Length: 76
Image (cartoon, rainbow, N blue to C red):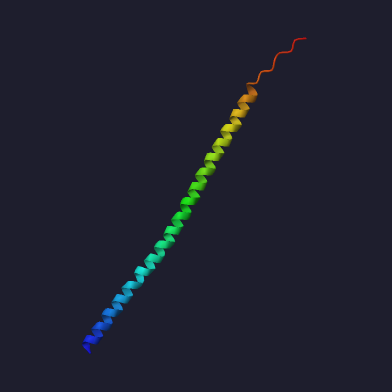
């Protein structure tokens, strides 16, 4: 009887310790997915910032070209 009780307690401990491992694996997958989404958002934000800087530089260059355009002087 004592052996049976000890065996049942041991089996219960093994099963109870196995559940948190599965739960941690599930949380790990969720954490990994969340980190992946966060990295994608960060990359998208960096790309948007880069494109904004490129557009600003392009506008600035166009403005400078307009200002530096010299038309020939009129001779009447």
